[in-house]
Image (tube, rainbow, N blue to C red; front, top):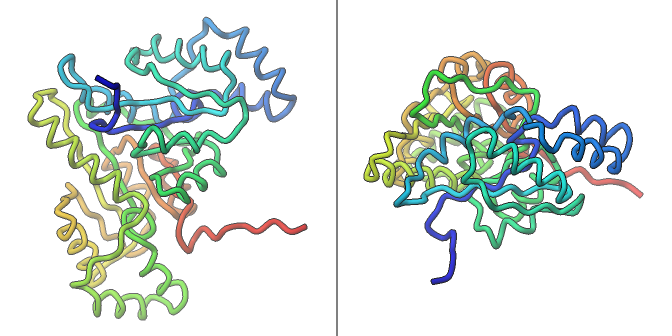
Amino acid sequence: MAVTLDDKLVVAISSRALFNFEEENRVFEKDNDRAYVDLQRQRLDVPAAPGVAFSLVRKLLAFNTSEHQRVEVVLLSRNDPVSGMRVFRSCHAHGLPSIQRGVFTQGRDPFRYLRPLGAHLFLSANEADVREALHLGYPAARVVTESVQAGDSNPNEVRIAFDGDAVLFSDEAERVYQAEGLAAFQQHETDKAEQPLPDGPFKPLLAALHRLQSAGEAGGTGMRIRTALVTARSAPAHERAIRTLMDWNIAVDEAMFLGGLPKGEFLREFEPDFFFDDQTGHVTSAARHVPAGHVNSGISNPVRVVGN
């Protein structure tokens, strides 16, 4: 029988998202790729410290059992193969021996391999790679490497928080807000309260997590998933967001309609393993308290055109 990942939740992740390679990256940026490779070669037997997305990956892999492999994590990196060897060794040293697949492109674009992987999520510290992955239709976020790492107070629960507009949902309503202001936005959402919002880039991930939760409950792993919608919306615009989730037949465990309040302190109390948002201000606020990633999509992230 052919090997396939079709029945799994597939996370593709870069080396810097999974492990702390910031010192090595500074060498790469300051000197050149040869100095970087030499440093990685010198440190082959030194496990890298866990990075921002480590907790998320470790907990997702805990849904696997000897009978059922429900989650696949694949290293997808611009690193060279020698550096890739250190990444695999670091996985083993930190109790993640089930990470056995990887693609190392030595500086070339890695995102093209998301298609054969059928990835449900791509996490990278490279903004350009994230943008291209989103353009191809894959949920992707730039990991803020200076984020606070996740705590360990919820070892049996994967906690993930999502922004709404331009993340779970399309940026349709956000476009109205930016063009016409808050009053027009509220009226627009009130008028369309019973019309589901179009899908956003992270709807496929939320759906995959919903399936994983159902499988995990049946499989007796002791792990569960807790999700939160954390949005700048407030009443009456909350109703369309909730009705959209109802239309998808997907429930979130918590919903925070903050009406523009800073999200960081609310996220600190929720204690997510990761938070996804499209607006850099919200991501910066969140990163002071929790692991965070920037979703480079929607009206708040216009494509930069480079002149001649």
